[in-house]
Length: 346
Image 1 (cartoon, rainbow, N blue to C red):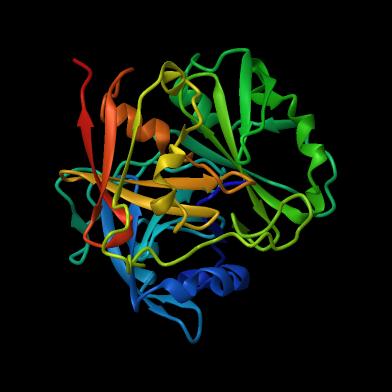
Image 2 (tube, rainbow, N blue to C red; image 1 turned 135 degrees about the vertical axis):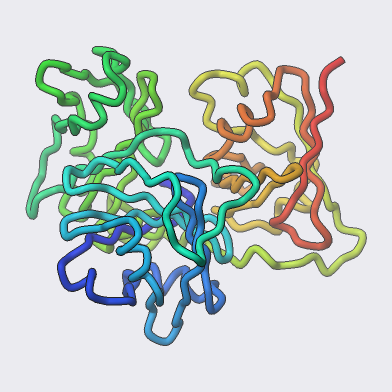
């Protein structure tokens, strides 16, 4: 299951006339108590905007300007990904369920642009919406916008990776613009699944995120539909013991460099620090002006956590090589905020 909580918002006619957006009840119950009175939304083109948050009503305030400036219409969809205490990544999908071409410079006064573009996962996304009572998903049409954008890059044999790390093979039929071989999804309780989010990175892999009927991901089991106690704790918790370990490190091994490497185990030597994290947690790591949100998940025995979501983006951005050592040092006494130093192999 994905570590980073997400929710989906389908845009209806009435939404476009409103300046508020109601968050899904499960998302509000599990996550929104962490929010301050305003949150920051980051978009693919590197721009960001602040909107208000009303915890009593569970709504974002001031979203009308987003609808207007992106020219959103009935039938479009928004995907929100919660990455830290007040930050969200936002993805916009057209009526054809493909991610839109974002405007280069939205003309709005209270938008801002950082010193460098916000880095997302790099892939183009599209949605597949399940119909009521659907029990089988064996093939999915690929929107023409994605096929046109990547040309002949999609190979006949592809890999599907679910948000729990499950990987299996499928086929892409170019003449019919569809993916087949998704029968593995029938092992899930499809009656509790609303949307499948496909991400294609330009190679042979399609990552699939699962949005359940609560319109969220990462807060509830897609298989059983039960609360699994995902830990989403405030990232500003501090150490109380001044002698507590304040860093961790690991050496890059050959298997960390694989194209589809899913993460890195943190050595048990640093349990004094990592035991303070939840079973499913997120740490924020920065180097200079760049920053990454890395999802951390502990094994069933809680003995050794692994960095999962975000690892490949982090590894590639820092151009890590086998033998390099990454040293993560806490910022102040915050157990979820780190700066990273890379000691290159000589």
